[in-house]
Amino acid sequence: MRRAVDQFLNQMSMYRLLSVALMAVWGVVLYLSLIGRLHYSPLELIASAVVLILSTYGFNVLFGWLFNVRTHDESSFITALILFFLFSPSIRLLDLASLALIAMIAMGTKYVLVIKGRHIFNPAAAGAVIVGILGVTHATWWIATPILVPVTLLFAFLILYKTRRLTLGVLFLATAIPLIITVGMFNGQSLLAAVTSLLSWPLLFFVGFMLSEPLTLPPRRWQRYLIGVIVAVLFAIPVSIGGISSSPALALLIGNLIAFTFTQRKHLQLTFKERRRLSPSSEEYVFAAGQPLAFTAGQYMEITIPHTHKDSRGIRRIFSIVSAPGDSTVRFGIKMHEQPSSFKKALRDILPGMTIDATGIGGDFVLPKDASVPLLFVAGGIGITPFISHLLNMRDANQAKDVILIYIVSSVEELTYVDIIEASGIRVVVVTNTSDTTQKRNWTMIDARRITVSHIATYVPDLSDRHVYVSGPPQMVSNIKALLKGMQAKHITCDYFTGY
View (cartoon, rainbow, N blue to C red):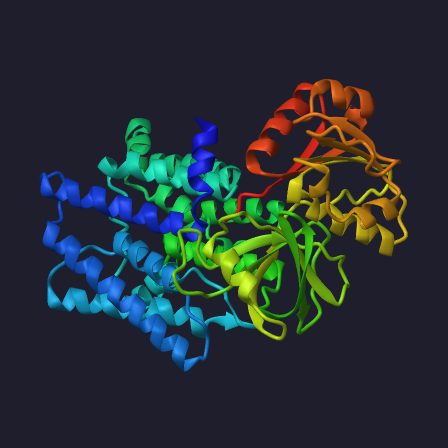
């Protein structure tokens, strides 16, 4: 079941999943309206959705032209449908005009409320707060209808699972729910009434569709957890200061602002220099950054390549940075399938001197601060890339670490970055389904399709003392993580190459 879910989710980008999820919820809402189970009429739902979609798209194009910024059409569609579930649908002309104004303000915040080319706030939340302050209208968060809880729960779970934010979601809910119940009882509600009232709070929609937005979350896991707790407290406890009352949207904006202080999300342009073949199925792409790049070895970068005829995986993708911090170039090792996505086709078409946009840098696939901790690296295929950054950083820092690398590939021809691995002097165990043991005399070659308990027990006898890092395709990482836990590995950090 889990493998089927992974295969389904890996076929689309995070943005496409959000679009599909929002459209699915809208479809359920329309059906419920048609059978008389919803307060709003089908005409109100359709008219409001059309106005918001056309308005956000139009204003996105207009602001992009005015500010000379490339637009992301799918993000405007996502913003439109989020706003649709925040503001009550209507067919009154004045109400529809208000929705168009909200769309204009929401999209405008992406271009006006920016620092170093990066927007700070969730556009839908910013639009809701601003129109509330202006007295135009207020968000009703009508998505928080008990009958919509099952479908909202399903898609919120899929989004959080896809983006590896499930722990963030659980932490938010675990903080907000007791506070909401406590506040309700303090205001005179019975325990049962306070618990029942949770169905009328937009908890699931908020955490799944809004709080999880990658561009407004900080890059490190502990930072995201801190933001989740802070936003949950602000979400659950009503406060009014100077005529401005707390709301879910305001809680999210405060969280966005705090998150921004953790990192400077610079808008970077990378200039393409060259590509080279790494293996029969992978290539390395080398870029020059226009300004110094601050990151930690093992982290990833999201890049954007607008192109026509884009498929469901969209125009943005994240890749582990192969380069060491301080390098003058940014390098990515990328798996190229026989039938690549439209994004990778566009990547193959770029020429030296052309530029692409880079958005965020993040990730927690970083080594312990204590350099004396022994390490085990387990890489599956192109999952070797973050480890190369680690090895280069160790070399540059003149650090000698106790490292064992287990490198799992389909054939010896798929081994990449061999020269860097050899130069590092670490112990290497290659697992590949081949009888060719001539490659790399100092490496241990295992003829097998996958790593087993026996292999690890033989070549990593001190497993419990090592901090383990596993990187590669999601199913492989999940399987190896389960195997290692069964062998009493104490510290495991994973990097899932989900491809979104």
